[in-house]
Image (cartoon, rainbow, N blue to C red; front, side, top):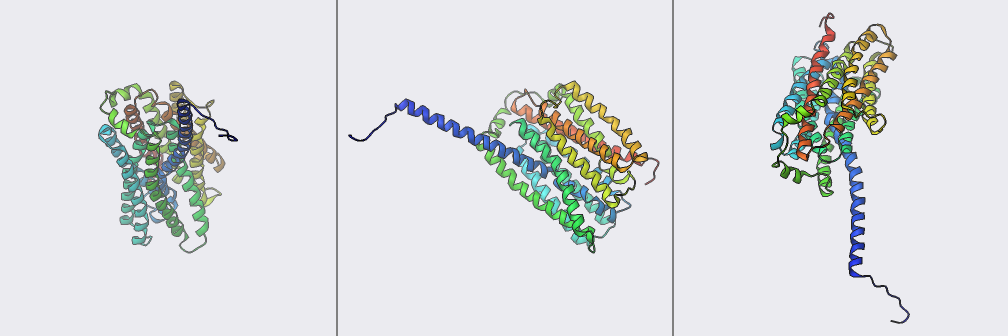
Length: 411
């Protein structure tokens, strides 16, 4: 037609252009989905320990209510057998378990346990005594069962996707400690001069914890739906791969025993010092009632920083031998803490506590992002569960070892 211009494109070429545009759009969507997934994994890592860290962070309230029962040590020790046993059961039956249902059940139990902390305090009217203390220990055990569902399940599930998700999840676990410490500072300041301020601050903190755990239930559902749509979460494929020949747990453990030993020793040391020794055996200093909170905050913040350090390739530990040497060398912190508590001032103790957290976070993420490489999807899932099992075994042994600091001091 005169006065008009038209351009014709060959059908095949037009199809290629359309395919290129579609591929580009899919690529952009996957990139955005990946960053969104990393952020949600971070939040879900928070939720994995937010509730229990909350119980530890309001330890000043529990020490006030139950001064004769060593609540910081007892609550931690009560928690550990349940998380260890639950994780061991799931690790053994990993190939038969629906990981998505396992994780969702765990986050729901986190919420119910956090809610239970508030209900218990209301029913007991903030009084001490053996009955409320036993109830607190039961709630700690419930947190342990929930953690046994989630930590190994999420590690195994995220190992099927990409290392960034695993790193972000464990950074979130560390962030839960830093965030709970910061919130505890806020609630302590807000109610410090009011009547019954310690209890009010603790309950406000517990309410925030409860709300966040409920949010995690919704976030986990959102994460799985989004990542499955973007093919980051090969759940369906993983279920099919379970019938394919794969290495047994025993074979995986044999090939990765050094990594498993790393995880065990890292947390034996950490839990033999934190939180019990820091809360009860470091003496009185000019910071007064704030001293223990500052130490806990120092550990949690430095632990969080340590979990991001492996993102810097130049300082990330990748050598299997180097990791094991670093883990063993870290036990020199035991005499360092002993002599600092006996002769040093609070500045040296804060520095040592920060070093404990920094090394804990850095070594944890270095092991968990290196170990699952080179395996099939189901094997990565199984290895993730095994490593978390050894991590939790280390926490249990460390929590028991923490009582050794009381030798010669009486009960």
